[in-house]
Length: 75
Image 1 (tube, rainbow, N blue to C red):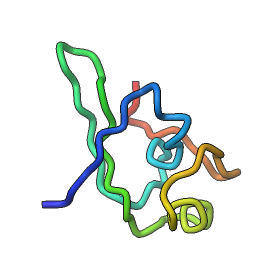
Image 2: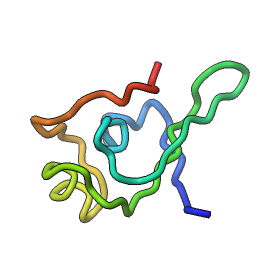
Image 3: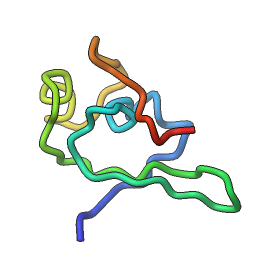
Image 4: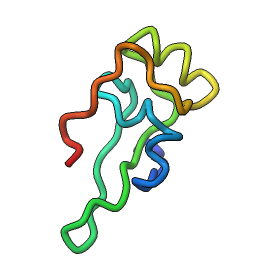
């Protein structure tokens, strides 16, 4: 089982990489009462893009790289 950190929507701008289509770690969505409460993300992923390689080495940043694409599972 991979440990994942819950990231609430109000923190998505601080954790922008984990909301990107190219995030290399495991993640899933946590809904409560039909509302998305968290993106649960693995914070030590194998990056799928150069931006993630630079941004996630020390954890995600609040800057989207030029290759950012919103994860298709997000509402």
